Image (cartoon, rainbow, N blue to C red; front, side, top):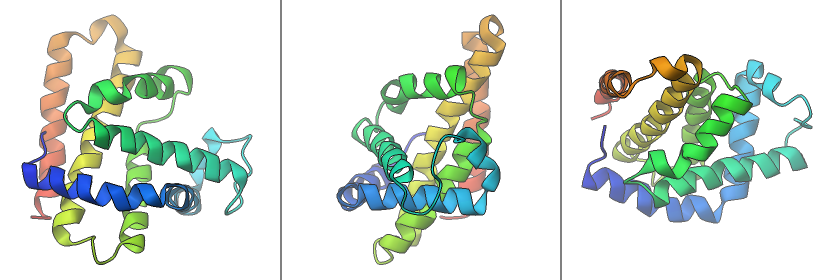
Length: 174
């Protein structure tokens, strides 16, 4: 799935505002994630998960920074986040469904911080952009589990399938 020029412009232009509040947005995104989906806290047993804690501020900043890396490399998100994807798949073994939950919480946080900027078009663009990120993360998890069976052909097939799913799910926003 590729972003249109208009969608890229929306993402990049809003990113400047988001980056200026990266710590607050990252912290609030994680607070929303853990409050709405408490099962996600299992990946953070060593964190102080109280609202505004140093752990949430630090990790929230890292999350927003990773999204920023994807925005800066909007034409090659896979390469920009490959090491991070490998870390979460191979070492941390994070269930990929959690990335969709995180993306949802990020969208809600951005919408609440920038209501005038978060138009229907902006919502659709950000949803599509975050879907591309999720596709990349899911494929890394598949590759880690299937290893030698995850051939180039299988990756291409999954990419086409997941792109189709993402398009269907975001089509109603247009």
